[in-house]
Image (cartoon, rainbow, N blue to C red; front, top):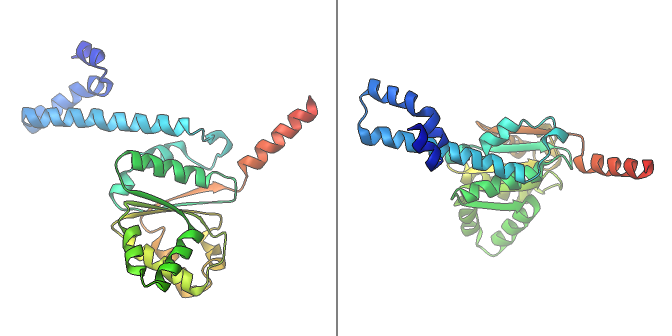
Length: 238
């Protein structure tokens, strides 16, 4: 088994075979079920390693963003949360990596076969307003609702009027508990009243988005600003 797994490059089966075999014997599993368990373990571990490689290749500097836990990001990259229809909120100041993470996780989710849509918050609201004016709102909301993962970027950068906020709320309601929504915002939840000026609507949106999901705080220190300062200091020293 050890030699065959090395030749076939099946490291997870090589490591887990004895434990899995002992468990299968205790549970009196059929040969077919035992083989399926082994192969699924290999597939799951291979997907995890692939996700880790892709996130590393995305050049996200975890050292520069100590608030972001690499283990949490790697877990999200497996897309289990998308399968469960759970939300994700990335909160932090400009330049702290929110959009980078949002796009990276959305790309990884799409590569795993899920339907993903990425849109800026203002663009989404403008599209919804135009659709409502053209009596196409239901179709537009349904289209966004068909995505397994809807990524909304730059939420909080601009104030939304009551109509725009209500339309965005309809999209979130369409996705609720069946599809995942991931948002990136430069405002903490308490600051969303600047974006959603209606207190009741703001409370309803804040209540829905983080519920039963992951929240990642990317911090306040801009990576871009720090990198620019470092280059300037290096140039001055030279």
